[in-house]
Image (tube, rainbow, N blue to C red; front, side, top):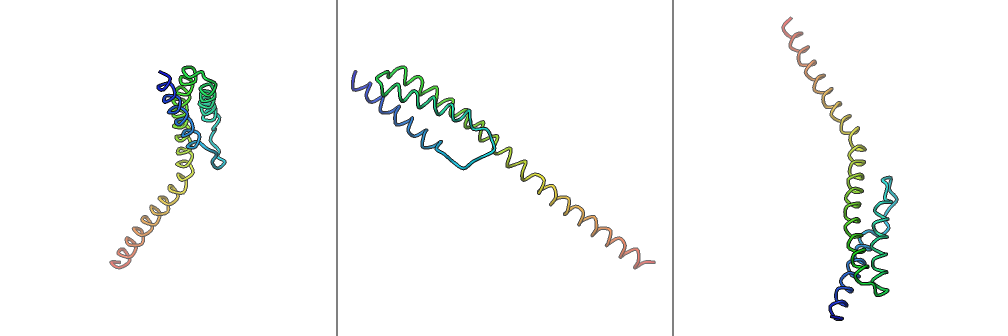
Length: 119
């Protein structure tokens, strides 16, 4: 039984470290990262409890923290993608407007050419 507890503990500690490395400090961003950081701290608390010998409590806290980290990380990523889409939106609209205006101007030029040709 002790061997099984050790293997579970080492697996959960490895998982917790992997989460820390994956969510390590990155560049400063505008989206709110506090929920992701809170979930990451929950994983840290669980790993700390396991280190103190409270394997079941620590494993539960770590598992909840990993789940919360995934959920909050997905929300954060969605916010960042939304910001990127909004930032790219006006430039794309401007490019479309320019293309449309150019097509309209070309059509008008062709119409004027043929109307002048047959007058």
